[in-house]
Length: 398
Ligand SMILES: Cc1ncc(COP(=O)(O)O)c(C=O)c1O
Image (cartoon, rainbow, N blue to C red):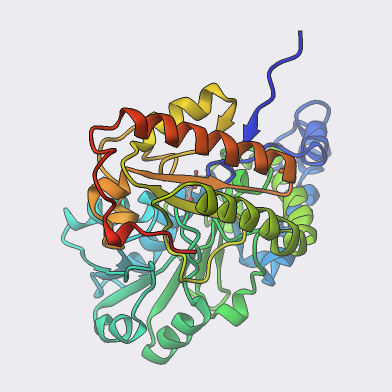
């Protein structure tokens, strides 16, 4: 019996391990399983493979290999950047970030606030965009770090990182970007962006969950978050996860070759899906439609529809999507990102996130569009609000 087809439209949550990536990992799970820190060649023979992976990631972000620290995930990379900025500048106890960051930033800042660190969370406008004048004015003499994500995981809205990098350099303040969602979808050049730190996570790039990296500019001081052995040149304790590092390296290589496809074929598919949904479902609107967005992401609100109920119907049709970020799906609170964009709670709770990849086809897009249309129609038929006139604010925005 063949398994029913899965229509996977949640690539911002995670991605499938590519066969080439698995192939790159297997030798280090089978024959070459030694510890890279061992003195004998059976162990330290794998060190060169960690270096090859580091070189491939460096090529993806245009850094030097020695500027890359392997971590356990994007969350650790984000935490490590903040931790380092605070500990290398003990007199500075202020962090500047945005209200729409991933919980890997927001919740770490909140936990630091209990230890006396002050955080400013910059607001965004209705399209999810930042006011750069306000950002500049919010930098204080005691600001240890500015941390602004490159692209938002829920809406795909892209922030002008190079411009923010220029402001931070002018002001002499350290700058971190969480580029977890941007990697593989748009070019990344740490020098052009002017960042001191940049975080990536492998599982958004067709590599396994549980491996990430932090770029630390070679002239930026670093204080480790995970203290232990001398791995990663004493910048991150813990025996290297060689199979996953090798897989991450291969994934970086594949991603570099796929950016073009993300910007063209994937964008065309995303635009087809978006236009079909807006054209066939009345009272729908795309969140952040007026901003520059990732080529693969749609966040769309359907008035009078509970996204959680919509997801259940879509699941029955074999469709994987989410109602916000995967980390917040299932929570009753409306998305903090959509709330920051000024969406009323009812519309935020009506929002569906669909995120595509090179693995999707036009046939799948048309199937998903039709299933969403039918599911929205069914839910609206049962909605107590169904017969009320729609609010002007919720008119279709394309
Ligand atoms: C923007 C962003 N930052 C950080 C993370 C966390 O990455 P990880 O799951 O590897 O900890 C995610 C994951 O969804 C993300 O989307």
